[in-house]
Amino acid sequence: MDSPTVLRRRLGSELRRLREGAKLQAKSAADSLGFSATKVSRIESGQTTLKESDVRAMLELYGVTDEAELRQFITLTRRSTQRGWWHDYGEALPEWFQTYVGLEADASRIRTYESGLVPGLFQTAGYAREIFRTHDRNQSSDATIERRVKLRLQRQEIIRDPSALTVHSVVSEAVLRRPVGGAEVMAQQVKHLIATAQQSNITVQVIPFTVGAHPALSTNFRILSFSDVPGEIAYSEALTSSIYIEKQSDIAWHATAFDQLTALALTPEDTIAWMHRLVSEEYAA
Image 1: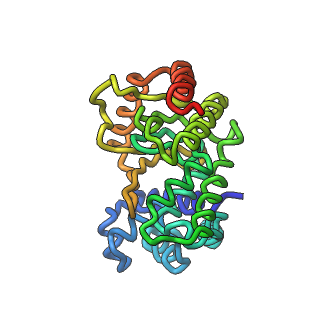
Image 2 (image 1 turned 90 degrees about the horizontal axis):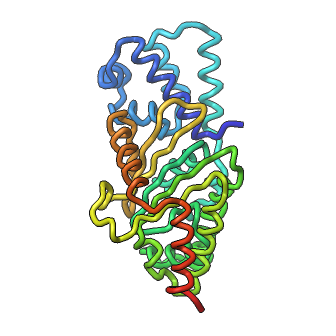
């Protein structure tokens, strides 16, 4: 069964198609509906839970009168309000990150560049635990931190099935040289990354310091693609918020930057050999 997130994206995509078919700009539609332009944008991008009353009002404005089509939209709206598995983690998962976890679970392909951290889908429990402890401004209990670690590990289930998701990750050399949690934690993390990188659906490349400046020197980003929903999403995050980019020209810029990064990075095979050397030279017991 489709998750709530992908259902919201489907609905949003269809509502955008209907709006455009009705020759309405988003601002004009928002004014007619008594919505803010931001609300229309969030509905069309699948970033907010839909209300039946809002969907009915939008369909009426866009001229949808066929009863069967109306019933289909309302049924999808009701299904899209279901809770995803990640909601069971409550306060362990920040509200601003819930949308991303849902999108990640529905993606068929993820391209990611990271300059500071091992990507969450590849982190070990020890590495993740250290990250959560260090970044915890609220001094959460050990139990809350362990729930966050458990959530991170559960997210990784999506990479177990090679036919469901492919991930291509480019990371800065700094990611693997920074001794998060000490030598033992990093040795386990790098060894885990080596094993993960050898899965048929996973590609990992390291950009060495010797490359110098490159197109994403000051940022991290992810590009998510979906098999059953049109369009891609570029995603980046700060300490307490995140940005979703769906403008085609902006996504194309991110995709071009990613291609440039892959060309500058070590090949996947050389990356694995480099990580083996790193473990023996930097993190050996």
